[in-house]
Amino acid sequence: MNNSRFLVIDKEILPDIFEKVIEAKELLRTNQVKGVTEATKAVGISRSAFYKYKDYVYTLSDSNVGKKVTLSFLLSHQAGVLSNVLHIISVNNGNILTINQDSPINNFANVNIIFDITEISKKLDDIIQEIESIDGVEKLEILALE
Image (cartoon, rainbow, N blue to C red; front, side, top):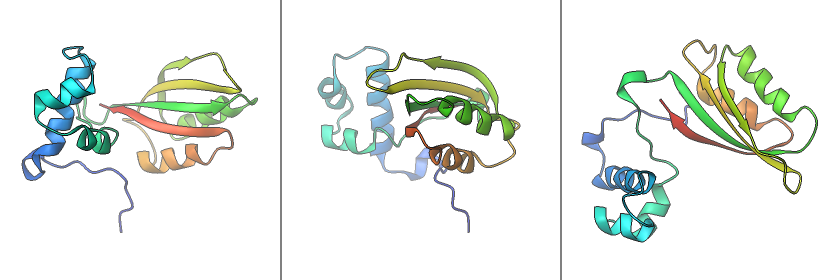
């Protein structure tokens, strides 16, 4: 049995709500609207539907499917936490492209990492679970998968 947390599904078989959430997110990303209320009104969905699905619906870039992933972390300000995250990516043949780290505030730092996943030796889900198990990784979120 496959325990993957992610699926690639043709949008033709999905309810329209998912595509409308993507449209609303795009309106917000490109600053074509002032806020969520305006975005949801423009695409014809409720704010509650938008908030329910916004963190779970993404598009894949057709030109680079499966090449890069952007992860966002909240890491505790402890020696070695970021190093442990990078180590897991490295030993699984992920190629780090960029790392952006904010200064720690209240003993936590926001970190974004983009890495190439074309040569990874495990499923991305397994790598993410391994990273989530590191002491000091308080939150992990997939921002983009291209």
